[in-house]
Length: 135
Image (tube, rainbow, N blue to C red):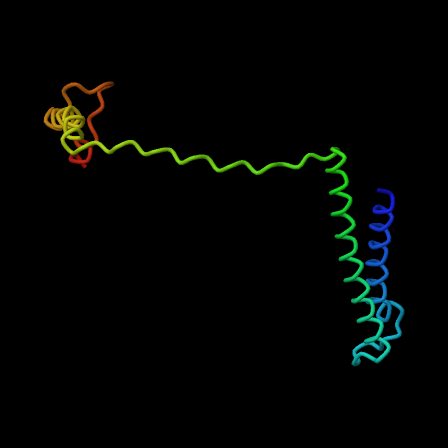
């Protein structure tokens, strides 16, 4: 476990070293401002890029190895994916005759309400249909 941790730290330091190589020509002033890159700048930049990429790959590999070791030791629990729930069967649709029998009382109540122009209103308010007609 300690070896894997030391490897991860070394790989992270390699990433930092590669990043430093990439920015060093600009930070230290060896690359003239507003000029094409010199051979030295190109060499340092691309060497630093290679070191940073290799270090990043190494760091990822070491971190995955540490995670695997922790799982084997039982210190980290691996979450199992939950199976997707079974789709709920859709209830059969009501036939049009059943729907008509359910809606018949509502239709009758609406018809009576429209025929009675304000006789049984609560709080003395007229229906919306009557208010629209009076405007």
